[in-house]
Image 1 (tube, rainbow, N blue to C red):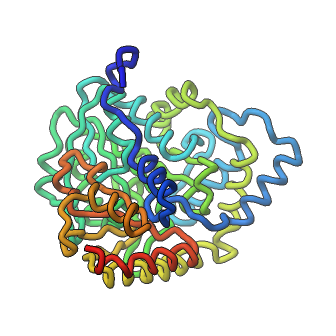
Image 2: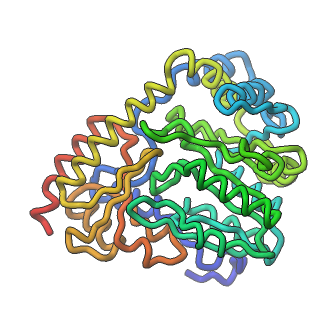
Length: 391
């Protein structure tokens, strides 16, 4: 491709691995356990409320900061689940999904030459967002089997140049749920080095038995230096709605809003009304408990299938992803394995080396998702059972 007309900041940025693998899956008729979009219906309450909002003609621009009903519902959610007192007017900004919130936050905080600490493997938008803001990435690698951060490596990643750290918990793609002890070390380092924490908590309600999601902003000394980002897509199985939010004290909310207003300005009004209704009603309807129980069963099913196929499985503590070690089947290249799996076995997975700066760390892994109907998972299982005999 001739990149003569392209800005130098995007040289080398190609198509995302999700687009590439989904296209390959479609080409070969593969069952797609790669890209993380549920193929089942989202929360009915949200959909009905959005339909009502459309019928009631709530179809014009929302306020730049977000619909008042959604910001109020988020403040109440933070109080119920995290015992936080949030001002919906001053502390909450609605964005086009968590991805925009992350991008707006980094553009609003990072100066050229600043460093941002990322845990690798990381969601693939983090690094480009840091680099488009002029920052430099410092990585701390999460390694199997536990994917817990090494305290010494984490301390070594901080310096006088560190501006921010991005903490994704529950973590995509490892499934690691950061413990309170791990988060307290991050909090200590942030305060010692005057660093802002950006938390990506989009899987906050998908945490399995024996584990607990702790919001970093609730730890001592962290509210004033944390931007908490989350979204509705994963929790309510409405990923196409792209309704996200950032919660922060006023001085950090300014970083989000000053950039958000020139990126998207506003997000779909009726969809915000739908998510407000979902947040108000989900707990009383037992939605969150059902969500975890449902995903626990799917996780257990897929992990069993993958083990029987000959892969080493790292059972996730949260999210709807599972990482596997591909070396028991004789593979040592994740891209080659995922292409083989898609074209020859008929199941698509994601090669996670795309989520690493140190590509070698991810070359022997593959990521699968279980946010699929039982019909989809069973179809994948039938094909995966042939994997041993094909390698």
